[in-house]
Length: 268
Ligand code: WAQ
Ligand code: MG
Image 1: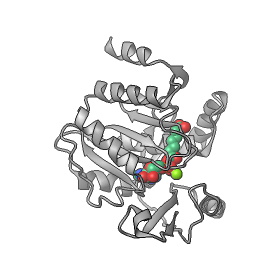
Image 2: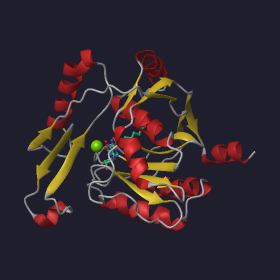
Image 3: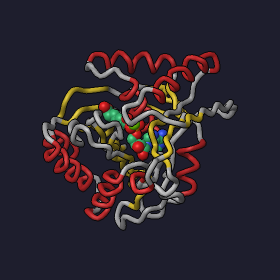
Image 4: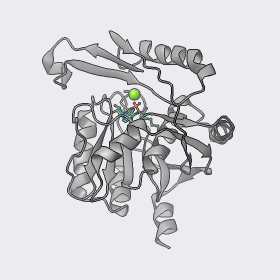
């Protein structure tokens, strides 16, 4: 699903297509669930805090190919109290993962600017943008979770008090992204003005939730995938957009961790 609104003034748009992105959602589902899911997606599009859309597009495709089966990333939440603290931690963690200061700055600019439907792909060292359409970005799709694994994940998230569609969908998406060999890390900030928890996801550190990643009321938001040198952006985009991936195994979900615990655990 994608919902958008024509902008009244070109200046407000910040996007030469003349459209403001309101909301988007996708997934891999059983055909028996189509009506329920479509209804839920339409609800979300119509009642979104980014505004009321004038266009909602729903695409339903039958997928015949077999799915690649993967595990979810282990989840934890970083102890973090202020946006200034989160900014510092994000830099520390991304540097720890080998990403250059230049690429971190570029990612910050992309996310502050916002209004992309998809994600940007950045070279982890040179900060070169590799996605073909820089206005739209790459939209990850065809990711889902097996019923049994979904129940197990739901129970783990409920215990932590974070069993929401937002967390569940973000974890599934991030697990698909991290399963690509060229991807070193993903940085995500929601574009919803009141959703201020974001994450850094990586094969190395798992899905690390970062509270206070932006100030309440901010319309900034976006996703950046940092990739290794030599990554072919077209094959990566093909995998992210087209290859069906299903979560069939759930890695542990933990409570909060401190920045020192993360570094100590991985320096050993
Ligand atoms: N593929 C690529 N990029 C996407 C996709 C997608 N399927 N969906 C959204 N984006 C990009 C796009 O630029 C959006 O503006 C931006 O990400 C944010 O999207 O554990 O809600 O749907 O509590 O607002 C994180 C949850 C929630 C953290 C993220 O993102 C937690 C969220 P949103
Ligand atoms: Mg959003």
